[in-house]
Image (tube, rainbow over all chains, first blue to last red; front, side, top):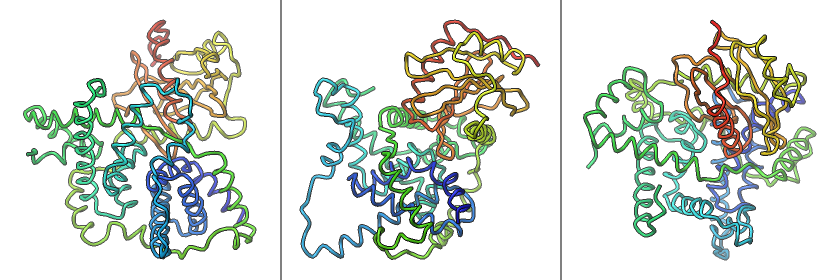
Amino acid sequence: VQEKRARFEAQVMPHLDAAYRFARWLCRSSTESDDIVQEAFLRAFRGFDSFRGGDVKAWLLTIVRNCHATALQQQHRRATVPLPQEDHEEALRSAEPGASPDPESASAAEDERRTLDRLIAALPEEHREVLLLREMEDMSYREIAAVTQVPIGTVMSRLARARAALRGKWLEEAAGEPHAMR
Amino acid sequence: MQCAEALRVQAYFDGEVDAVSALEIERHAERCPECRALLEHLAATRARIRGELEFAAAPPQLRAAITRVLDEEVRGASRQRVPRVPLRPRPFWLGALGGVGAALAAGLALFLIIPALSEPVLNDLVSAHARSLMPEHLTDVVSTDRHTVKPWFAGHADVSPVVVDFADRGYRLVGGRADYFDQQRVAVVVYQHGPHIINVFTWVAGRRALPEFATRSGYHIACWKLGNLQYCAVSDTGWDELQGLVRLLRTSGEIDTPHRPGME
């Protein structure tokens, strides 16, 4: 068991940051995403013996995604009393260490990052996840297809649509504020 | 209104096509203004996402919590700590490309190749980086003085890399090391940034182009060329921190162009 633990540490733990980023984009709330990542690592550890090689990161992110889906289903099932509908995006921002209340540090770069955050957050989920896996996690089409459980052709068309949508919104914003475009 | 080649152009941009298709697509883009614009748009979008979006690292508390959960799991005592969630059976992973997907994938396989050509070098870099993190493997010459580290490479590597201590900017020079891959004695300059080690590899550039950014096994890799030398920085730091060192190295490399051509 200790040997399994050591192998897990060496092969899976390096992908914690990726799992965390992905979960945060899926949930849009940091407390929830922490729970999901934790649950995903436990599941990954339990299933590690049956992992037959291949890309560890794609395998791990698949589990993160499934944990998120399961958590969502349970929430829906439990929601006989509707939960207070909080503004997730706001919650995420205030939880970020970067969003400190120091108004002087609210630089232009920070503003741009927020704009981009918002544009990406506004994409439909199935487009957003494909885009992030490709651009942030640098995963291949085949790996993304495995994580999102759709054919490669679907990955390609979703990726194209996500990029086009982002471009469109980005141009719209630029039309509003002349300096936003680079 | 979009060119019928748009998805192939995108696959080319994402490094998912073989050399023959790449050539075809490049020729097509020369003639097709729409696809040329698409390529520009793809590059601009990527630059903006990679440059501006936060590559957040997992908070230490989360890392600690996971370690705790796994420790308990190993001891078989995790039952009350972790909420039971019914587990889906596992074939989702292998079945992901099933059915309709397989047919489509087969069609696409005509021009998709996996892995890309630059893959072996990237894998070598990551292996070398991981190896260096094992005890006693990090440095062959330990010094924070560039005038000690730089001459050391003359006898131990085929190139003389840029060596500068950026301690005042948060990147402390730790030492140097020689590695062997791509049929060369590669010079490695080791920096420390906070708790992270950054290995900067330098060797005589081959004809194979390396991607400017890549992530393999959780490590970020940034590659650039200066003269006839290929530089690659590898680390588990965030993108921004890695880019910070790359910028410093590029600037100082351009100022004193200190390298001599590799000895064949």
